[in-house]
Length: 421
Image 1: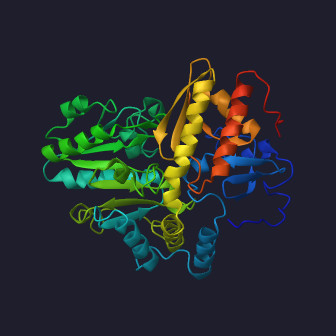
Image 2: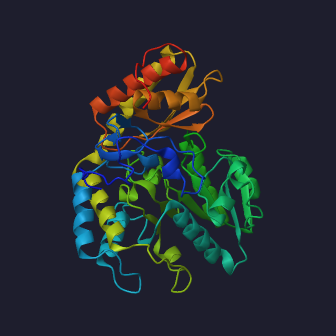
Image 3: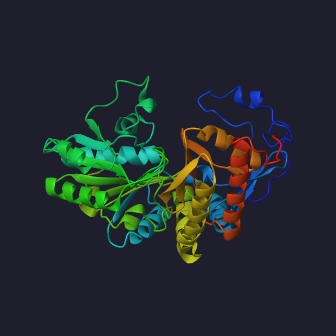
């Protein structure tokens, strides 16, 4: 997306007034969309049709890692589009090799190979197939994951997901999956047996309410997997690519999984997913075992390279812990001073404001929206904040101010003064 848009055609959603019914009529009704469309973005801000400006503390659900219309990313996409968009994996793709080299180099020796796909769910599917291939000859097929986890909406990823609500109506799902309480090492140890090929976990459960694992727990899981000869796979779809302050979440936690799944912030908004793994594990995927038509296409790979360059060379990665500390301190002050707010949790720029039973997250998210702040209600009493990694002090302070206004509005104390559009 370019920083500026041309005048929209009459049929474009970039009209001055939004006819929501007409826009939604040709679409499946599987999303509960807000009645708003954005015509452009810049940094941490989105500009809606009609002119209202929103501070984006959602970043496309942790996807717009460099914010909106970042010059380096825009230039990379434009330049690549002018050369070649797609050739398929029947041919060499130099941009793919360069993206893999950069991603693996950033693991500092942990991983040597990358597989590219188009989304987080596809990355999880690839890890599941990789785990089954790895355990096939020894009869190990069971995969253990955590309750309240979310790994995606394809059948395999859904089977691995530990939140029953996502599964209703899609049964029977693929078998061979077992779920245990997140953070309970004894429960995990009780089910990891001779039939288990892998343990799949999130370092921070995103859809589960931004629930971080204890570092000691993840370290103990790593030891358990090694002792029992099973793979330890980390779902880094939200925690990867700088979200926690290191390039990868496993680095933040000081652990060494056997493979990780990446997506979301990987392409800065361009659809792309990846799996990073060690040489010996990656070797299981030989020609014919797994593939994708669009995965690793030159356009997506140019976006991955641009994001990597920007995170490292422009100091964006170093920005995360600084802005995280400021944002967290402000949220904790709000929690201490505000009725209906009970605390803060999370890591890096993946945080949640926790609410008392008297205040519903959906109501607060709507109040934030009315005040010009984009967040989302990830659980009934948890508001998730996933701002872009290019956040400034001014952005943080404005976001905290808007959140205070929204809280006053949601608790029936008029303060926002912003009319719905």
